[in-house]
Image (cartoon, rainbow, N blue to C red; front, side, top):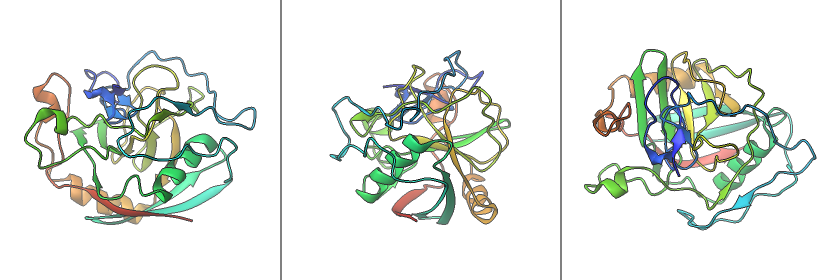
Length: 249
C-alpha cells in the first residue's frame, strides 16, 4: 500500500508509496511508504461515531497481531512513551478526538508490534519536516530496495478520524495513509517543524516540548535522499531512530 504524507511534494513512495511506510509526507500512507499528504482525499471523518471502530482485515501483516477492540476502551488524554535509541519521547494521545486511532496504536504497542522497529523516512525540507515510522519490515542496514521501502502494515486498516480542519505544527502525531479514504494502518509520522500538509491525515496526539527537542537533535543530521532518488522526497534518517519498546499509560 502506498501512503501519502507531504502536500505539494511528489508522493513519497512508502509501500508503494507511503502505505507501509507511512504514511504521509510522502504520501502519508498507512503502512507502506509515505508519499505526500497533499491529496484531495475527502476529509469526512468516519472514526467511532457509532461507538464502534471499523477495523478491516487485509492480510499480509508484517508481524502477526490481534485486531484492536472494536469498541474503544480509552478516553481523554492518554500518556505514552516511545523508548527509542535517541532517548525517551513522551506523548499525549488524544483518545477523544481519535478514539479508533489511539485504540489501534495502543493495541499494537502492547502486542510488541513496534518493538525494535526503525523509522524509515525523514523529510527535512522547510514546511515538510517529518519522521515516518511504524514498519517492522524496514531494515536501515538492508541492501535490497524491497527491504528499504517500508511497506509493512499490521494486516488491517483503520478508519479516518479527520474533520478537514487539521493542522500539523511541530510535535504533531499523525497517521500515514495510501491516499485513499480509511487506508491507514500501523504507520504514522511525527512532525518536528511546523508543516503544511493538507488536512488528510488523522491527528491523534503530540510530543511534549522536551521530547520535541530530543527529536530535533536526532533529525538535525538530515537524511540520505533515498526517497528523492526514486522520485519522491526525503530519505532514510542519517541518525537511526529505533523503537526499543512503547509504554502506554
